[in-house]
Structure formats: structure tokens, C-alpha cells
Amino acid sequence: MDAVPLAHDDPASILPPLTPASLFTQAEPVNWLTLGLLLAAAGYLFGVVRLHRRGDRWPVQRTIAFLGPGLGSVAAVTISGLAGYDTALLSAHMVQHMVLSMVAPIFLALGAPVTLALRTLPRGGRRRLLAVLHSPPVKVLTFPLVAFAVFVVNPFALYFTDLYRLSLSNGLVHEWVHVHFLLTGCLFFWALVGPDPLPVRWPHPGRVLLMVLMVPFHTVLGLTIMQSTTLLAGDWYPSLGLTWADPMADQRLAGGILWAGGELVSVAVLGVLVRQWIAASEREAARVDRELDRAEAAAARAASAPPAAGAATAARAATAADRSDRPPADR
Image (tube, rainbow, N blue to C red; front, side, top):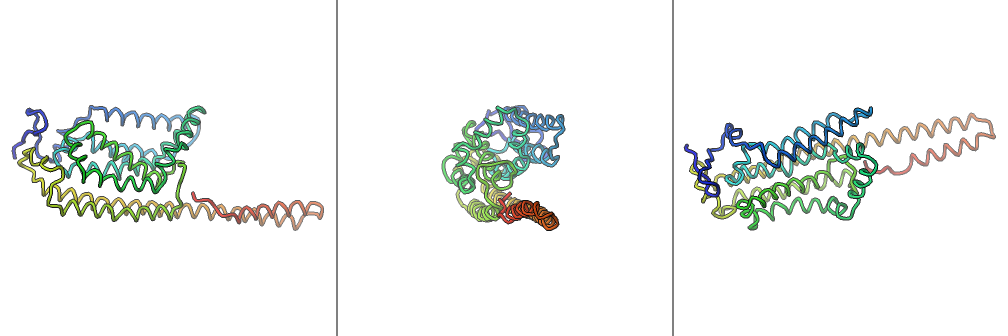
């Protein structure tokens, strides 16, 4: 089919049908977002190199998570040719939505950039970063229920108000929506799966419950968009005159992407949470075993020690046993 001009762009601009080839031919890799991604990657790598130079180790899997599916997935949906279709096809926008709010934040969180910064910044920088982490606004925004509420309400507030139409016609609002999706996703998944220190971190059962509660919201939103007989953003998509696109069929596809994508990511995150839960339980069991071994060794020494030294040794054994009986904190 012939390519057609986008009604809201320069008449000389041509948008061909979306194909694998157009994901490359329509790419615009030179923009402000590219610079931001490169700076984020450079800052992370600088921290890793600095740790290695002083003889400290940094898990390779964290570096891969942050740079690969973390920053890489952001680049894939905002710098590739897909970004050229995000105001022309709701389905293209929805792929961006899912990646920016649910895929990239998970891997960025698993990359533990805050922990890396705390280990590499000078003392003054660490002190300022910790002050920010424990400031009242951050405490509120990272509280799991608040992060959950913002994450869930966010897409409903976008798609069922005039804000979505505005984001299609206003470039500044359009970019802000992308940043907003990424930030709200990071807030939510940092509290769920990230190893970074946070002011409030729920135990694993609470985190699993939040993830389970999120699933129905994506299902409802996806099905609502799929089954709606009214186009989102009103006449925006028909006004573009894309002869190769059916706006209503594309909207049904977009709803399916949101529904299925949300389910798949939710199941994957639940798997990560269960794995973290098991690992934390095993670490705690090993810690308790070590405490008990020390207590038993101290008791044995007390039993075999001379009477004068036995009382002091028994006291130390009792203290060690008392510590092993204390309830562990969630990790």
C-alpha cells in the first residue's frame, strides 16, 4: 500500500505502513532521550569500574539487567521506528506503555543503581543521597500502597480523560507521558523486586499480595479498551487518513496487548518474588543455624571449663542463644 502523510505533521512527511523494516527506517536515534540513556549507562558503568578498581565486586547480572533489558528496552520503544507510530497507532503506543511502565522498571530496579551509587559516591554524596531517600516525599511515594495506587490509577486517568488526546497533539505532553509511565513503574517495582534500600519495604508476602491485586486492574482496562465501540482520542486517528490502518481494529489490538502483556509480566514478577522469598528464607535459616551452632559451642565450652571460668562462659552462651531466638527482620 502507498504511504500517506500524517495529518498532524508536515505535509511532506510520509509514514509508511508499520513493518519490521520501518522499525529501522523510521528510527530517529539522535534526540534528547538518546543523550539521557547514554548518560545513565555511562554513570552506571563508571560506578562498576570504580568498584572493580578498588578491588570490590559487583554482580554481573545486575549490570546486565540495568543496561540490557532495562535501558535497552526504553531505547527500543522510544528511539526505534516504533516511536514514529506512537501517535498514529494506538497499538504502537500501547507497546510503549507496557515496556515503559512494566518491563524496563523491573530490570532497572534489579540493577540496583542506588546501591551502586551509595558504594561509589564520596562521603558527602552518600550523605546527600541518603537524605533524599529518607525525605518525607520519597517516604510517601515509595510506600508500597501509595506506589501501587499511583501505578493502577495512572492508565485509567490517561485513557478515559482528555489527557490522552492532548498527549497526541502536544509534543511536550507526549514526552511527559512517557517519562511519567517510566517513573511510576519504577516507584512500584522498586518497592516490589528491587534490592536497593528504601525507607519502607514490605515483607515478601505483602509484596506478592500487591502483585496479585494488580492483575485484575490490567484485565479490566484491557478488556474495556478492546470492547469499547468508541475510539479513544475521539476523531484523532480517523483524521490522520491512514489508508492502511483501521482505527477500531487497531484499538482492539491495543487492548489485547495491554491485557495479555499485563498478565505475562505479572506472572513473571510473581515468579521473581517467590524466588526472592525462598532465597531470603534460606539465608535466614542459615543465619539461625549459625547462631545455634555458636550457642551450642559456647555451652559445650562452659560445661568443660573450670568452675571459676564456667559462669562467664555460660553467660556468653545464654546471650548467644537469646540472640538466635529473636525474630528475624525481612530481607
